[in-house]
Length: 227
Image (cartoon, rainbow, N blue to C red; front, side, top):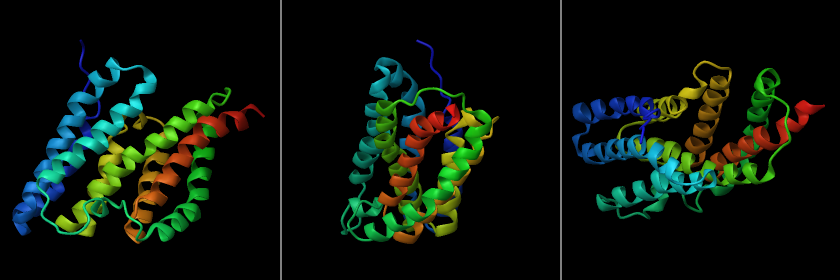
């Protein structure tokens, strides 16, 4: 079996919180090293697991690597007495604010996707099933990049370090976009979802924006391009 570790660039930004914790906050080092281990697991196993399952099984792989394994590993070193899931933005608190910001910023995201798609997307029939699967799957990336690499790192470093780490890692996770206009959409989406999460400390609005943008690009945009 050929292994393709194409996600490896996503691990580079974790150097920022590692250096910060070594210099200013050594009690954060254990959790940051655990996040580093999670990223290594994702990079090493994503490709072979994806090959082992049919294309529809990718959602299972994403939930396993980006949500379930991180939850299990971070739970083993849990120190806070607060609700465990609330650390990742999975909570009732802030959900209304999160959804409001998500819906407010969604038109910006869709406009960017539409403009990029005008130059790149090849007209084709929209696929409702794939669009729905990708909408749900968007939660996995929001959980990892905004829930862990932002909200958890904010509590372990500071907002600037967490923001840069989350955004850079999210962008670098998409090397397939490096040489196309899609990289603009990736950067914009990273910023908008971070802003929603930063303002509300809740993931749901970011998930709605991310998932809706995926659905739009897969289902709606190809139809629009046919006109």
